[in-house]
Image (cartoon, rainbow, N blue to C red; front, side, top):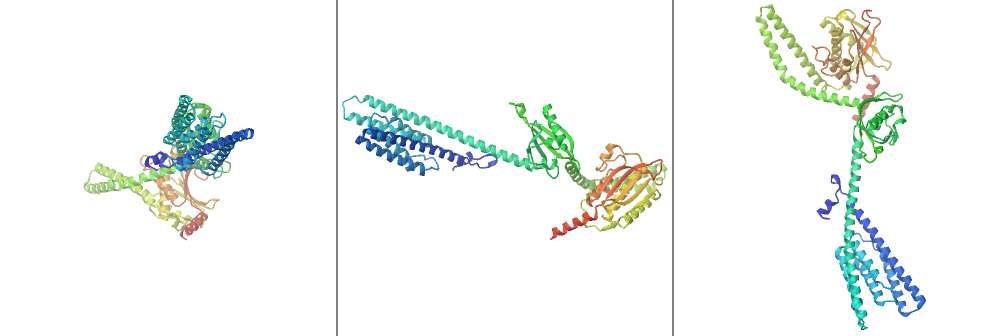
Length: 576
């Protein structure tokens, strides 16, 4: 195959199609049809001449019957055994066994001239055969051979009589001209049809390949894709959408009705609104099935175009898991923080150290109280900036420290009491802490330095909101019904606004103007590293001061020993 032919049979994305194979099958069907027509004509000739011989018993007729019988046998053999794989571009033995046999057979019958039967129309069969299945040169050659044989027969008939030969030659010439025109027109039509067939086959193949690529892309998308009709029936649902819909692990294969489960009602309503308003929609919704936690999704819809019939519109619904989106956003924030921490270390820390050192040198020579106050302000703000830099760098270090699965067990009550007491002595607010330690001998797996950092951040946060009066901060340890160790730090204070609660654990978010907004974020990162969970809630304390019975409570739920054992077993299995 040439380069042009190869490009002609190449589909989208550079994929090769099987258009040549389809073309050969179509060519084979035409070939079989012509071979069947030859057998039919041979059978008809044998029947007609056999009947004439039975009625007249003329000696000349018996030879015609024998000739027709041989012709029928030849056509049957060609029909049953010959099946060309390609078009023959020129004269060959393949075409001699078909076209030449037909032309010679019909010419012989025309010369024998049994009765008043004219066999001239039969010449159309070899002309059509070569015009449709062969090349133009072969069709013209066949028409030329038929014309020559007709002229030869006209000359033969006029040799034995004195009759005028002009009508016979004119008839032969007109028939030959008709054969030439038939060969030319039919061949051009056949070429045009073959070209259109190739275009159709390539278009069908391109559409099939494009559909397969689209299905592959949709199936591998991380986002869910649903195609819903106006009646709420899901026509197409990719694996991600079925996983998000539930119930259980996955929804059933499409098609299925969104009204089959009550948890899908919001999706059905969203599709109905899209069809009613004829506009794209976007909203956040939740899917809840009995016995399962609600799945929060973000959905947006688009309508397909159907100008001919609006009832054929389909609603394409894209679903995204909000939890996964939040995880991606958190990862992007971590990456941005990592880049920023490097810039902070190089661009802020060194100049800040120089400012602090210069301020200390200046402070030695100051005598005026106003000047000393200004120097103290510089020192305090330099220390504050230094703390912010350290907290930003802590975030980068958290991602590089040892894995939480390899830490040893810590006695929860002892560690919490010791760490909180150290903080109280350093901050001068030990008297304001009330302890309620009920974990007994329970041990938790948490890095001691990380646990200290979590407790100090939570105590600093509690002190900012609760003040320093006795009983304003309460530290409690306990064992949950799921046999998980827990630490709760409660502080008296005003309730947080709802907008503040939604962003508590995000980096650089704080309700205090002088806070960096990184303390609670670092606590969450350290807890997640050790498979612990940190949370916030507004708690009512009846045992506390009646003037402030309500307060803000942060809880840390450590991973259970059973989960630790399972992870350790899995790690050992990976090693072996």
